[in-house]
Length: 296
Image (tube, rainbow, N blue to C red; front, side, top):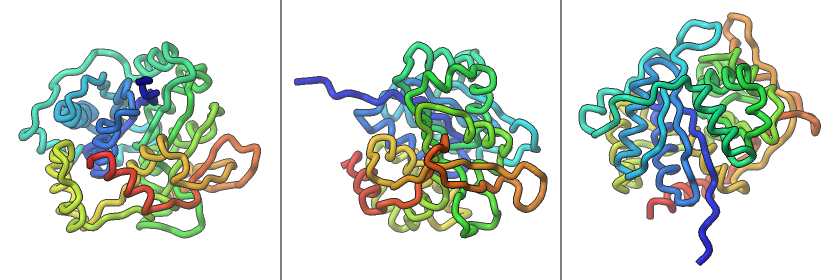
């Protein structure tokens, strides 16, 4: 029998804040077509975030290199200084210490050794990725593709701020990343991710697989503040392997950098020559089939 071709992925995540990072990582770990060649963490308390990622890897029985990354954004104050789900680590075995290597060195070396093969899936503030592209500009050309969860590209305001959270947490990094030429870059913003939601009662019904047990434990902190999960990051993850889930439009994104209520807002200009593709629609039923089908 022919060996199934796998997709090599570096997963750059701020796991430990919104629960959707853990939901996405569990799916990647369960997917036999995903070869996780690295997990990098970003935002406040990156070591605790790395420990949370390692707890899921332990349950999955996977040995994945995990590298804590940047704690602070490039030029604004820290807006996500704490990994709120870290207290759940008391209940799950996890890696305590990690390889002493600078995150962009790890990313650049891994990408160069697998030139043209790696998908960089970034679902947190874009600090690590911006630093990578600034310090190792050749890395962008060595990637197979960059897949992001970031931005809000339509006219409708979604939530209580003009900018999407990942962009808002480090707008200068997002500006660098969204305008770096790559072989292919796709961003899944609030325009599509807010179409895939599940209320707490449904989550308890559907999240029954053993690999989702630590996710449910982490989710208790999340549900103490919000009644539902929006599958922002899982949509970006599943879209790497199912390219029919979303439709896309090509163009240019510009991030509002000046301090003010609209800092982190992403302005969108459609153009067939643009370096970026953004999701403009999603098949929600197909997404949920793809996500939960991995655990059945």
